[in-house]
Each structure stands twice: as structure tokens, then as C-alpha cells.
Length: 370
Image (tube, rainbow, N blue to C red; front, top):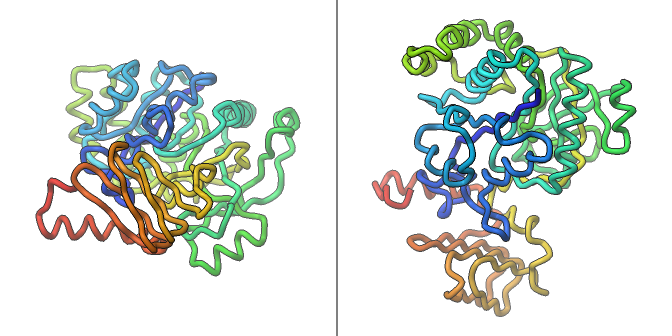
């Protein structure tokens, strides 16, 4: 059976002042219907993976927001980590839980804070990946995004030769699977430009499809200490000691990403070119892409508030109150984000530094604004 494991952690500090400690990035809305990104991540899967087959990996403090966003998730399907240990341990935990109930479980692992459209092409791509894995159980699939510019904010996947299989032939009008030559970490600007110019690289979207047993076996092989810890946890599943063992074992596990622990070491990896549009909404400038059709003649974008932009070009203004007005005079290439208690004004080419505001708030003990 096919399952979804949704990663619902992090904070999204570059989206301050909307993203806060008590309202992480995935609980913001970038849809006209007001649906949170987390809810959208669950809903877009529904034509392929019903909500009863969805598992969520998160922290305890996010459970109320998860329940508010998707009330029909079962409590036992929300896996709350007792400590943040990066993605490899928690994905291994989810795989072990799935494997206990379904020895043939296939899982898609995906973040909860991406904007993906249309849902049907996304689900068809996942179905293609699941069929590839069913025919080749040792295969790990990652979804790659065709770069639209030379980004230094994403990791890259170098494609090799196309995979020739009956399943690939069946889905050839959708997309093509390629072998993976290697993964590259976030590059410098000149290297990113070379990657994009070559036409042989994808952005790494952090979306994976594999057999639960396969990824668990690889964790045991490459990170035996993590494997042993997962075995201790699995031995207590569905017993009165399960939570006690989890809290005793999990916080001591090595902190490592699934990319380093497994993906960069495994021999059988394929990448599928995404047949859908994708954005990780990493910074406020992402709104330029998401709402490109809503800009005025001068390239100004206004969301959630009234804006007067005089002698001003290429600005982004996001407000929390449609009854207010924000006026820009003689300003170009800036981002303005206004909430009830904070306002951010930053040049577009400086927005990666928004996290420095968080550091300053901590230094001043202005914790109400974190």
C-alpha cells in the first residue's frame, strides 16, 4: 500500500514577521482560499493517498496547529519527535512504524511547506514513482525540479542516463526517470550558473519515494547506530512502554539528514523530472513567482492590504488587514510585510538576511516578537 509521510517541522525564519515560533512557515497561507500550506500538502494527495494513509512527523508544540489545519488526521498518525534530530532518524522511525503494519509499504516523504500545482500531475508523478519502486524494490526515487534560474539556495541533482523499463515506457508522456550521478550541495553563484547552463541538473525538492523496508535496511547499513536505536523503538511499538522507550532512545540518536545518511551513499537512485510547478516559498521574494499575474503595470505586488505605489517599481507588499492602506513613494525593489505587531521592510537583494532580525530579537529578549 502507498503511504505519505509529511515532514512538518522547522520555523521558516526568513518569512518573519508572519512566521513565528508558535506559527511555523507551513501554517501560513499562500492560497486564495486561506488554506495553510500544511493542509494543502495533505489535500493535494487525496486522489492517490487517502488521509488514513498519511503520517505526519512533527514536534509536540505543532500538534494543535496540525489538528486545526487537518482535523481528520488520526492522533496515532501524528508522530511527535521528543527532540529534533534532523530527517534521517524521524524518517526511519516512520518507516519502522509503517513496516510493522504493512511489510510491503511504499512511502512518499515530502515537506509540508511547498506550493505545488496542479495536484493531478503531482499525484501522477508519485504513482509513476511508486510503480517503479514496486518493480525494483531496491530503488530509491527522488523528484527533481527543472531549474528556472541559477539558485544558490537549493541543492542540485546531476542526472545520468534515462532508465529503460516497461514502467518508464508506460509513463513516458508524463516524464522520464534518470539515474543519479551525484548530489551537489548548495553551490556558489558561478557553479550554479554552470549547472543550469549544462541542462543536466535538477533542483533537489526533498521529495522521495521508496519501499519502507529498503530505506530502513539502508539506514541499518550506513548508520548502524541509528538502525540499532530504531530497533529498540520498534520492539516497544504497541506496548505500554512505547512512549517511554521513544523518549529514552530518540533524543540520543545521531543528528543527520536523510540526504547525508542514505541518499548520497546508496547505489540505486533515480530522479524523476517534475511534471508540475513547484516553489518552496523560502523567502518573501517567492511571492513574485506565485503571484506573477497579480502585479500592476510597474511590477508592484499587493497582497492582503490596499497599496498606493507612486513612482515605485517592482515591490512586494503583504499586509494582514485589508482595511489598512500602505503607501510607497519613490521606492523600488523592496519587500514590505506588515502584521498586527511587526513590520518588515527589506531590499529584495537583502532578504536572505531576515534571519538576522531573529538573532537581534533574541539578543534584546524581545521574545513576544519571535
